Length: 283
Image 1 (tube, helix red, strand yellow):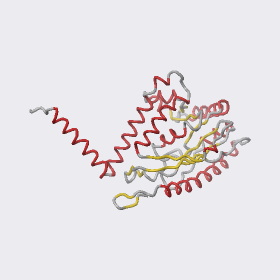
Image 2: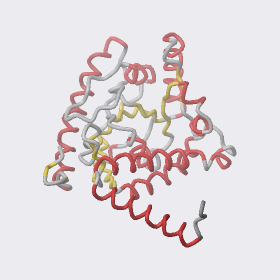
Image 3: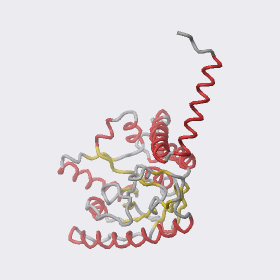
Image 4: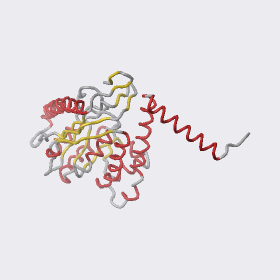
């Protein structure tokens, strides 16, 4: 068998690069999977490469600022531009429960935009994530609160203690109230967990709406460049509320966020028209 010369290897490598570039520009499906592969690999790398530095201050929200910095550069690489509005609405004198609509795994890029703007942020995650080392270790180091979803009583105790943490440390707990990914034109009904925490801590709810990702369509396998607005809404107070007010609080918050979701999405579309692929508009 004839061995390839150094020049032959170089030519094959160049041909492979050209093929990738060609497929990236002509195939929506290839571009979709390629960009998500870049997103996943780069996100895992940015989360773990800073672990040696994080060890100096374990469980500090500041540890997430370094991966967040990397993720903001990743957004640019993927062709996604975020604009943040409503920073004047950020709760300043207490902790709060930050509620964000959940669209995609790409929401981690949104958290990267929020983290340096809203101090003392943390998130809740299922305990299984902790065992995915080294990523799980990084999550623990930047203060992620892990809950056991299979043990309802234990999970509830964790949520109750989280309320104390928010109140005493003036922390900001970021949660996705829909409970699952939703890229549709309307928000899903909210789960109760975040509202239990808000009432237990007697701290405000800080709603944040992210405009619909018009550049992403998982069903059609589209992942283009795009623009999205992160809209920080005025806080919703919970002082004096009890569990009896839970349903009312959920309905009020859903109505506020749902209306803002439609308006913010319309604003984003007006700024960045719906992309046209192969002569067809992508909804």
